[in-house]
Length: 128
Image (tube, rainbow, N blue to C red; front, side):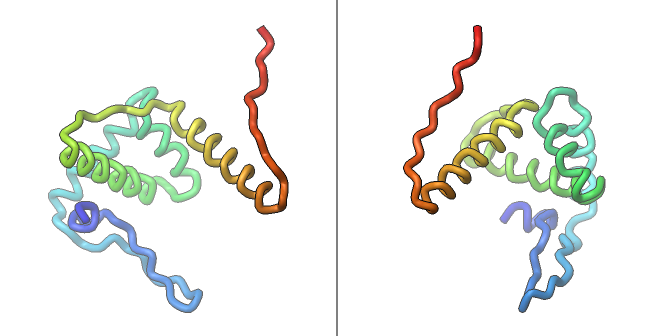
């Protein structure tokens, strides 16, 4: 709700298979400008989660949409920090590949189980 109030929550307007505009809307221009500047500063930090996420998104979305996605992520983090009274914890650049690896492992395991296989996963032993 906070991201929607700040007008940085992209829409997904689809009806009968037809895609319509998903614009974020016009909110407070001062707040939006401050948030975009915050996102630009956040993606320039070396070895940080927001920078890694931006570099991941910019190839698919383009720079402007990727920055708005980062702003949305920042707003969600601010809401979480205010709600739980916690400080910001940077996940680091290694978080995204690890998250993808876990997601892919779970998805493939589930798919094999749907096909009728019993699956037990064990990590591969590394050579010392």
